[in-house]
Length: 327
Image 1 (cartoon, helix red, strand yellow):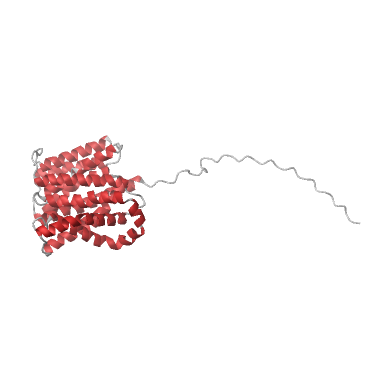
Image 2 (cartoon, rainbow, N blue to C red):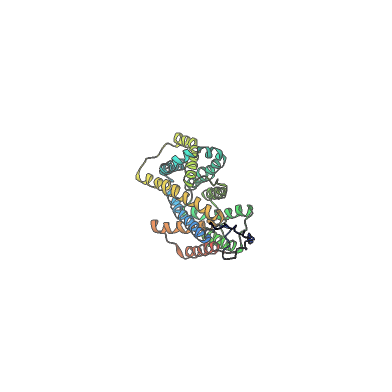
């Protein structure tokens, strides 16, 4: 006889427990980790310094070529050499981004005009009548203009940075005026002040650079547009002044300004501005007269003197103060 099957008593359903709030140790972090700002700032300052040192040599080159290569031809061949140096790394990417380039053609044209066509033509023109040292010292005025642009954009400069800029600017003025405030400026000096304004405007404009436009593509495109804008003036210069003899003394400086001062230095400067802003990168640019004076001492045997050393100490101290973190 089989045993009767007994029904199993239904179990009482358990009441679901309310999940407890996660503790502080288990709470997921809402924000992604931020990159270390000190590292980015340090890299930006180093890149700005690299560009400044390399550009210092371009003033010496401009002065060396003033009696052999006409200024417009100097500028035109500089960018042709720069294009040859950058094209292997950027031409294909620029072709792939041609739609993006067309979309931002206004920005790229203005950047090319200020940073390539006008700036370098004015520097070469100034080299006809003023020394390389004066060119470097006057270009140190551009950080003040960059700071003005930054302030107009709503940025707060901070007391420490303003004090450092004033100290460095005082050192530059004393160096230009040989221990006193300069009261007279030659034609070459005025050309250089125009170049400083053009370069500061270019640096401020980089803040509006399209984020999706790569650094190499930006260089390649601005070099192409800048050379195209120089082409009519180049043709006139050839017709009126004639060409120049391609000797080693002429080709060497052109290769330097085309490869080092254009391809390398512009890439480093644009990256520095992207990392730390035009105003802070411009503070490093105060080192320009120091670099030019040191190059003149090493290459030309020109003594710095006590006054030059004191002014450089002011410039270096001002740059260090303005570049320090904090207000």
